[in-house]
Length: 288
Image (cartoon, rainbow, N blue to C red; front, top):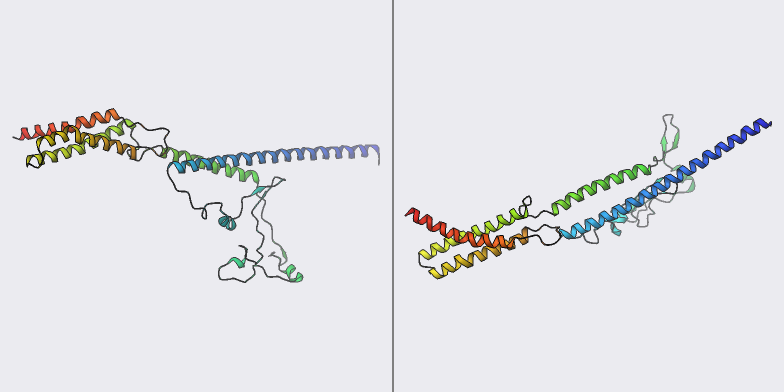
């Protein structure tokens, strides 16, 4: 071998070595990025789980029983585990090993009504080689079946990230809905309080008319009628509106206590009931 050939071979080997080192560095960086993405996604999903638990407790949603909760041993036995990133950067799917026929979940032994039947019966060595799965080619020659294509971990992580984004979006919508009360959800707190107290006062005004009619036939005396009109029915209307705002005017998720506008409610109820009585008197006098 001449010196020129030796030098060319040395350069080729050096280039191959540099290419191998560069490929190894690129693959190592890729694996670090994949592991970092997996850790970040796991932390994000954990935070989402805590936030959903907090949301469920705020809106008083009962937790599922332990036997039917996701991730329970009974359910985990029937469902494959999530894919994991191996050291080479490829994703290994769930285990698909055949059942052993001793009560495991796989194979024919797990089918109801097939108790005592092995999932995969024992075969002699020669017959076992013949029982391997084969795919018949057009020429009629049996060839081993092709394996499933390897899953790209970057694609799977991107899909998981998109689903996490979708879960965040739905979680934000649920929080917005939980921050609205069941009673008049699109109204402002002040308008809702005015409407509730006015409705309570109007209901008390109907009772005032009933008391006036009862007083006209002698069932209620004048003192009792005046006491109910000036104090009794306004107080009942005020506390009724207060309780309604506390029960149906409070959002499921709220920081602190929402305002109920007590002075405004007191003013509305203690003015609306006597005004209803005065309006009734004016109506009766006008009709006469």
